Image (tube, rainbow over all chains, first blue to last red; front, side):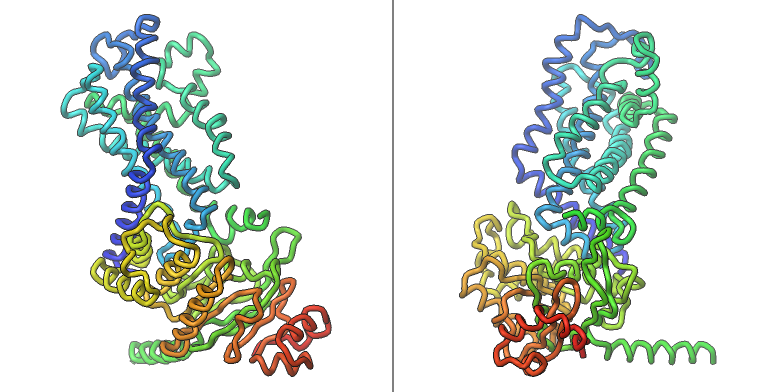
Length: 268
Length: 269
């Protein structure tokens, strides 16, 4: 296989993911409405309850809406990663995962291409959210809109890879409810998305440490800093490390000989 | 000199490969935990052969297809596609293979054309060539005029035709079909059978057609009878009838799967 052939394969997989996203109106709308509900209702309600002191990357006191916006961007990507996990389960049940897997390209490439396709969709969603959030006075510097792009890509890849790993474990479509309860909610709530970690540390050191090792915390902080033109090296490092681990696990999970596919097939 | 020797050796290997049959399965066994799904399965599909893999539900046909398409692999036995070992050179093997799975694999929310372009991309085909091949294959299955319709709007038989067209877009030389006629009406079933037999006769395509419907094995078919994960008999229709001492394929099939002794004569040619 030549480089242009790899390029065409990647483009085809991204195009299909985009078409599916556009065709599934419910997914399209809920992906936008969900973070806006948090912003418009939850953040408005907590506006006067929670005060956020000056912490990096902010240089002044900020309204609560401004604080949770990066966490909501990460949430868009978390849901998208899990939804691409759902789509893998759905794909597998519908059999179209087989279509992907019998492509003559190496399996690791097909999985990474699928991952990139999911990230492309999530980045578009994130920018649409940022455009709407501007009306809630979430107004990062113009350069921040550009600087956040690599952060969104890296965080999206990591959360998408986590989705891929989960999809290789999930046997049935219904189990997505379990993913919501045991992955999405715990990851979201034990992170810095809704409240600064120094506040969590005062309340519960254990939850603080869970939050510190939570990949979602670092995805959120990476995005938060990038949005205000700052680079959070620790978060970038942690997100990258989790990305490597999750991709390795996903490739292992979809390996025809060693992974879970063969064992799962036997159980069907 | 050394380079010439290597080139000569490569040339000889390529020549041997060019003559290698589309599909050779040798001594293939596969277990899911304690359950043995396939035991020592061997079969061969030659160029232009319409080979029917005949077996009841649960015989191991789908497992065999999953192994041949590398959805998972077995450590026991070998699968070669045009001489390419599936475990060592999967890319070369998969490039020449077209597959119609038992399960529906089209994306219902996309149009026929979008589904086929996706498949073409998975084989790295340039857009222009993909467009031409999609037109050709859809015309052959009588659906060219509906290429922009969503798959959801098609009947079961039409969806199967699209899947067949899709499996052929990248010009494979080996076509695998796993129970392709399940749930289809008589007309759609006959269309698929005639179309695929025509591909064998006119284009020299090697075909492995898995089914539990005995009448799909026509007089010209090579037949492999799979039962409880083992090849019980293989050969032409006449050879199978002679081996079972019966006059109809249905009776021969019933006798062979009922008669454990028939397994001794089950080595494929």
